[in-house]
Image (cartoon, rainbow, N blue to C red; front, side, top):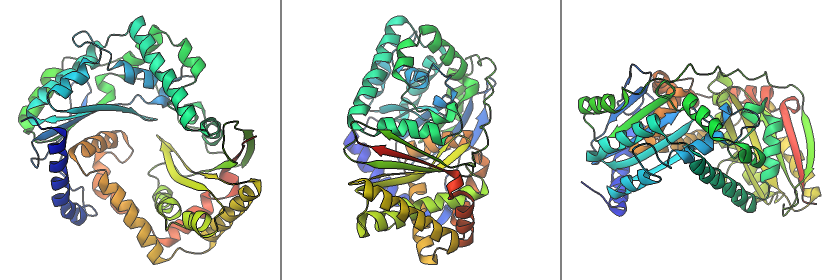
Length: 445
């Protein structure tokens, strides 16, 4: 059955509405969807989850091939390979992968993060074999030559130009990350440096592809209207003959977090007004303190009623714009915020106000009502990550590579929901202190 985009959207709304009650009742006591996991002889990990609510299937293929694995002088490679994966293999021409999926009424896309590169599509359930063939083909026989390489490099360079035009504080953000994170691997971003991208060669791209885009470094997640036995047979038919890659390089653990505050300044010529980046080196992802800090993220930054939004933007009017979040990059996490102000005086007043708010967090427990609101928003965002078969396919693939793993899923949300006021105060005392902070002041001239 081929569904057009409007029909699929309507069915997804109906499906999500009927699913909400089941999620709410089950999410705190166990993962609300059944799934099965197994591994092929070549190392490919496979997760299957049946859901016959719609005649659709979503497929996500995740490689542990994010920008963390780039070397100095070769930044941009992860994103480059993401682009090359659409430019043809031995059996599929340039951009033909997209046209195959569109022709059957499906949708496809890709995304690169710090740790992973995802390729994903949603198609009518009877087109699952097409998706598996396409993904196995570019895993096994991607074509990388000079012409494709130049096309992919130009796309990256054009993207950097567009980002710089659209984001006047981009350069300061890059500098800030290099100060806040402990090493090159964690501290550089997906964009890559223009001078590095110019120098990337066909051999560089092939080496990265052959090292990281292999079955033993990947997770295939299939969610939707599937038959487990038939799907397992199809996966084996298309992927089992692909040879595993060579031994994966060891990813060195990060240096211990610095215990000395950093204050720097820079001039951003395109910036419309003064601003600053403020960050804190916090507990590693999924450690005990991390759960409290993740809830604190929602308490401080998320929604108009969050503490810093209400205080600095709505009530006191010190900041023109403020955003913040807890951010994790594989085995490192930080809390970061960015604020824009009218003038330098407002910058200083905003920084003092933030310092005062963090001092309050270190000394006074948050109220039960405020904590409940933050947890409610967190839970809503968590459940939104399960709201469709595609969302779930991506989530399951990501969780295979995360420290909790699929085995930890039944208890994961509960660990956030059990955070107490004392745990938030204790985490604030350990991490939201000057010794763990990095401040980068941005001047517009």
